[in-house]
Amino acid sequence: MMLLAASLQLGAQGKDIEYLKTLIEGRRVSFDYLLTPEVKQISKLEGKVLIDGECYHIWGNQLEIICDGVTKWSVDQAAKEVYIEKSDGTREFLVNPSSWEKKVKDLKVSGNTATGSWTDDMEGHYFTFKFSSISSAPLSGTTKGFDVDVQSLGSDWVVTDLR
Image 1: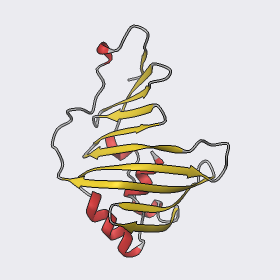
Image 2: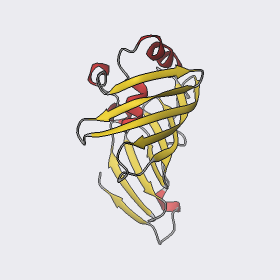
Image 3: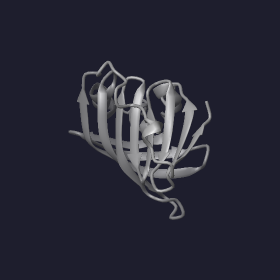
Image 4: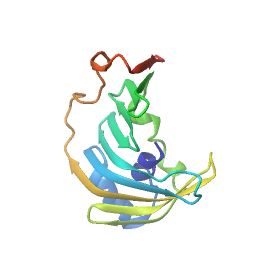
């Protein structure tokens, strides 16, 4: 979630933040991400993000998080596990921009790429990030494609419904 928060709520950082906001606010947006931790004990994270209103889909490191704005499915392809939880949609990680102001540093936006660094105060970790192939379009107005049909999964999948 931190990568979305870092990408969407970067605080006041001049023309770069304003340009990025015009690409993503109130839009259907997708981008590739790469998060590189400062400490080697934490794995590098890379994948793709799609946000459409309160819906989102995050792919990366054999994991997927899919949300229709009400329900969130966390899918672990390797372990063949799905966790289902209630969700507040993108409000789960899109908070007051001023709270992220001090966490994002060195923001640079050029064309459809944004780079910078982000510090997680809760965990004390420092990451550099790169969001590339940023694509923006009008909102779709539907939740189609932002769910998981757990009935279609094989019997070897473990489904845990925490709602």
